[in-house]
Image 1: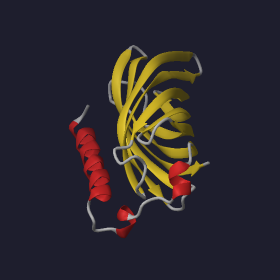
Image 2: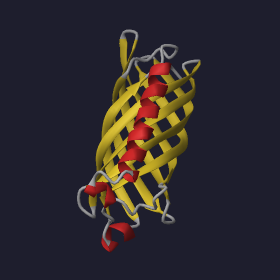
Image 3: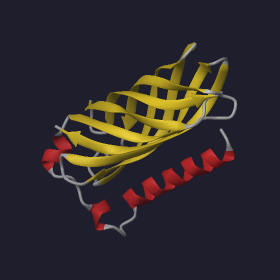
Image 4: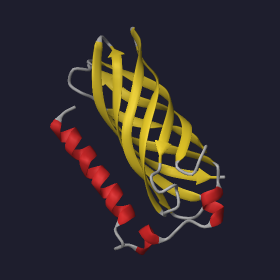
Length: 185
């Protein structure tokens, strides 16, 4: 992973932890109501970017998709994520589709309005363009924060290492940032 990406991930981690621990914000100190904390299901959409390493012959692209998660305990949520990234390889534009199973650990149990989390996931990615079709296992390691607006509605920001293990003959650690609304029910 490049130094710029690791510095960005470190900064995101520090901001997420500081926002949930420091008493400087009343938003960070407010607890979710019983209704919001008890919601077991969570669905959302996201928009962001996938910034690929130079070794991977794909250029950075817009990443968009859908997420669903289920709370299995106070601190842990299991979910699925699917998405499409619009990329460019040499002269051919293409699509990188991906799907993963993910697990999120919320150290404060999802009880705060600013709720940081750690994320791990595994799945598959497929790249398609005219004349090229490739697939690869994908692993996701990252961190993020959920920001509640209402008990049932919030926003999620996450930054992650999007590791394509064998895409176009290369293994690459790529940086991904996503933002989007979440709905709890």
